Image 1 (cartoon, rainbow, N blue to C red):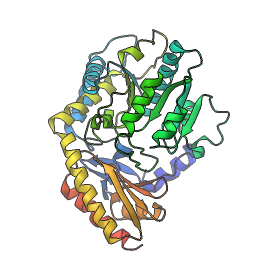
Image 2 (image 1 turned 90 degrees about the horizontal axis):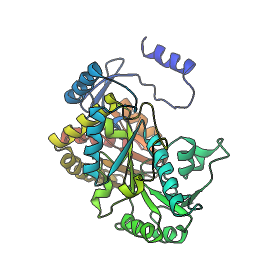
Image 3 (image 1 turned 120 degrees about the vertical axis):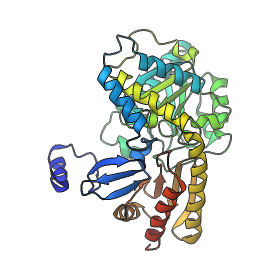
Amino acid sequence: MDANQVMETDKKYYMPVFSRYPLVLTKGEGPYVYDANGKKYLDFLAGIAVNVVGHGHKKLVAAIAEQAAKLIHVSNLYHTIPQTTLAKTLAQLSGLDRVFFANSGAEANEGAIKLARKYGKTLNPDRVEIITTENCFHGRTLATLTATAQPKYQKGYEPLPQGFRYIPYNDIDALEKQVTDKTCAVILEPIQGEGGVNIPDAGYLEKAGEICRSRGALLVLDEIQTGMGRTGKLFAFQHTKLKPDIVTMAKGLGGGVPIGAFLATEKVASVFAPGDHGTTFGGNALATAAANAVLDIIAEERLLDNAESMGQYLLQTLRKLQAKYPALVTEVRGLGLMVGMKLTKPGKDIVNQCMDKGIIINCTAGDVLRFVPPLTIQKTHVDEMVSVLDSVLAKF
């Protein structure tokens, strides 16, 4: 099929839930992808913060191929070496004690919600309430879209599960007022991704942890977008002195192979017993072998350091554009290679014009350009992207 045939066939057979770009991507190499016509694009979206080691990394490809030839899946009724290896590695790297593997970020958050509810009930049968924040995003299952305090995702799916309350993000006074003896958990993103790359004040996460501890509630950090080195640390909470009770992750964990996970302290995880939670595919040998390879690449190629240094360079160059176009760009904010550019107008047309010129970025929250490239990018890639963005912004 040529590109037009692919798009027409997709339109006929796929459920109409995505507003896809008129682009059929066929291969990738490093920070670049290619469409069906052979056109090359610099990918500063990376599968929405997923392709942390870029496209077609030889070590990741080899690990997937080698494991596929050995063993892909046997279910969680049996042990596998890749899963056990990954569980130990993540526990040691996070400072938490136990892990459960799922297939996606939404599943990871769903499992965290179940674990928090079960833990809360060991303290008080009525301790089931979960607090989340406005403009958050935690997934699209029925429970996680209820946790996602954005009505646009919830409309049409009522009645929603009970027991969720919403407060403003980065408002410690609101949090302190709302956590009660009925609160089993507070779920926070260290940086809100889909909400517009919103970064909390210094000390916000630590204070939230103190409030939760003092009142017997759990602090759950959704690191699905911020995890796997995106901010220059393996987990964003490692920029603080905070130790959360539960952490969820997905996106970059498999480098593009679907896998999610939630980690917890021994105290919290111990409330689970056989049969309390499960999955058929989660953490299978293929997915965990891929994740092990991604973690090896991050360590061997010092990608955390690269994310920090390239993130600083990206912020500097984008802030020059802010100074150049003050009527259009109001703020550039970010940490590591998770950066947002706040606009005074919707960003859709800018995204489309950048794509026409061979640059892939996206717009979130309507007016925030989001930059989440592979952690492998170099200055030449940043310069290439910024040069094109400059030419596009000049038109507006």
